[in-house]
Length: 382
Image: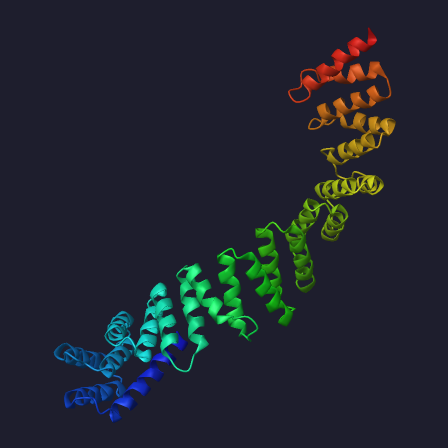
């Protein structure tokens, strides 16, 4: 808002100063403009608008100064829509007048007519001499606000030519424009350029990580998050996200280490997840150590996982002991029975295997598996 008003007021001073010396003004134009300027100086903006509107209606070939002063008076009176209409009309009448074009752009932006403002700022940049790149920045900003991302990208490409120095706010805008256009390579390159100058900007490390995640580039996303979390302490949820990224890219030891840094209490759920990563890395001993003693493990989830790890490592007697203890827990009893039967099977204890399978023959989840096992056992015993 402040920057918009500054542009308008500067143009107001420029326009009125020039009209005092302008020889093309008719006596009527000079009289009305002088009177209107006095009203503006006295802050009688509405009266100035009325006077200039009346003069404009009565004049077929009004000069640029009339449009400029009327638009400024309307803006100062708080009627931004009228200001936009006046400046736009003046710009159409005098398409080569850079000041009218720029004021039309500013007024359109003030009225949230962002697409129109983007086009007008772009035109004003072409008209003003010397070249003013800030007008391209304003144009791209307006297009971005209008969600005209391709138009914004076209302007940004002119604002950030190769091997040229750019302002930081230009770079920030360009990053978001290219991201919206899904130009991942350009966006990530600009973020890295920005971070080379601002290495401690945690917000843009976070944005870089998000950009990589949107591309499913999980390895680079994890690297960006590691830097981010050195600059800003992560929440437990953020650490869990990083651990799962490591798990996804098959780096289970990094995943386990990340979760262990996060989990202070190491609840059963935490232990199970960390142990799972250690198992994936072939570190069964670390996983087993993490799963004992099963404190406050009322559901038996830790014990059940411990038994499965022992079973996979072919420690069938130890696994069977764990599963036997789990069979008394309602939530996991049928599953534990099934695995107990498998352990007995591996040890060729057919009687115990049959007993374990028989206990769960009617279970909806493990009944069919148990029935298959019993059928095979019947064949073996025969």
